[in-house]
Image 1 (cartoon, helix red, strand yellow):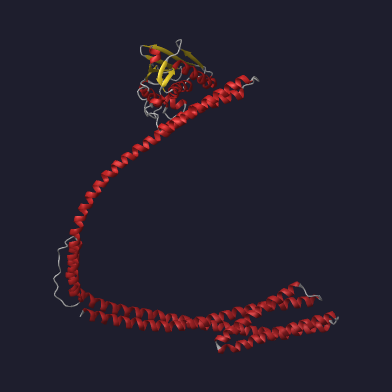
Image 2 (image 1 turned 90 degrees about the vertical axis):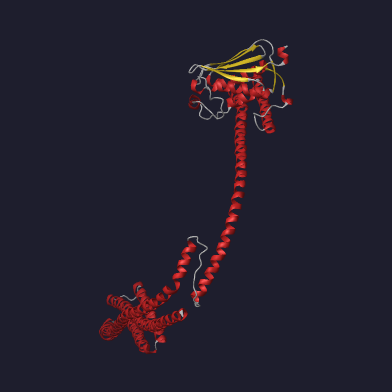
Length: 524
């Protein structure tokens, strides 16, 4: 039943639309015809206007030349004649094109042919008059010119052009008036057609709305219940039309959704358990990755710090050698030996870092050898003297007689002591004193590295051995530091069984005291 009403309303609406479409199509054809007529008339009007304008310019130029008695053709006349020819060509092409489309416009071709013939004859008459001037027949030429101007141009050409222009103007006005009348009729037709379509739509809408309201109420209530999550809802509809079929399909869909929801809940619970397990695994892996990344960054920082020290000394030795004025090769040989020695040390640093990957890694047993701290201190003092020359620092060494032995890695111990001496030189005031003092206590060797520099504030004394920490005064004096030196010194000493402590007085310099266990040779 509902399908019948739907087909009825659709058929009435389709008939109204078809009728309106046919009417609009026929009206559009009339509009197009009137507009084409208006456009043709307006174009012809413009072409005649242009031809008349160019023709009068040409006539004026020829008459002025004949009146002045010139015998040669001027450039202005040639240009005017060319523009007149182009205007006539466009007028002729327009007349031919529109005559092919509308056979009633053949009389326009005759008028265009008359204008063309007159222009060709007038050009011949002008040439003849100029020829008589050249033959010194000025009286005859002037009489012929007067006749051409009055009888031909004013008497024939001007009425011919005025009539053509006026005729095309009337055609354009007539087409415009017809087009305006047609548009006015279309306006009223559109209003009437709109009202009819609105009435048809209103009637059809009321009928369909009534039928839908009776049949679709139960479907809407069931849909809202399903949307709110009540999948056990079923629609009671005993009708045998389309809505009855739709209600049965809706009930079947609700049953399927209910089964799928139960299955989805089971899968969701299972998925939550798996997600929880995987989350714990990912958190563990994330912690491992962060730890590995931190170790990588610390390793790279330690590498850059350890490599910077010998490179700095090598550069200092080379700069001193370049500034020396003596010709004696002995100082240069000494400098080269120092550079070779530091290069070997640098290579050892690189090999050591590549093999162990971290400074905190416990030293291998094969790396531990008896090391003479006295000799090591002498070498470091020589390096520090080179570093201190730029600030005119005095580097002193206070040591007991004879060797002092410890078991350890000479390269690492030298790096640790050099870092302390390098810091003392870097943060000392110009012309200050840096002192390295060695003394022996029962079972231990103590090494004091003292400077007269900027000092360390008391409140920062407990933080200086933390990685990447730099005191306020240190950052002001040397902004480019990384805060890794003292951390590396502490690490190196700890893997050798030693320790380091700070003895400081703010603004009066800094003293670091290193304690290393004595080796068997020294103890004996």
